Image (cartoon, rainbow, N blue to C red; front, side):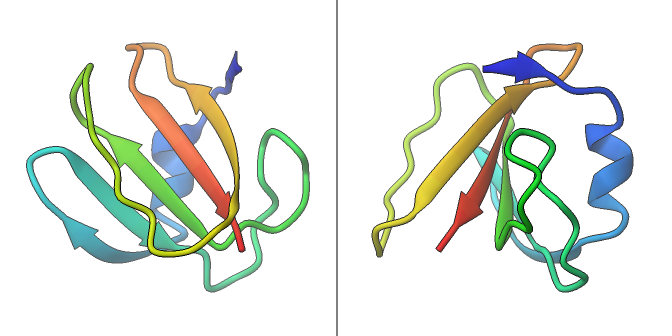
Length: 78
């Protein structure tokens, strides 16, 4: 897991899908490359709290990074 600059800026290029007190989900509708593996990702999940529970409806690969303030960003690959 690494830290990547520009994660908050990247969200402005994605389509917002769902948000609650624990997470915010954005869809990658423009085939932006994942900052970890450099392959296009499907969705970005931003964890808003130190402890967050996720329920995944299907099997997928995940790449993870944190930003400068320690928030976790999950990049999904279906």
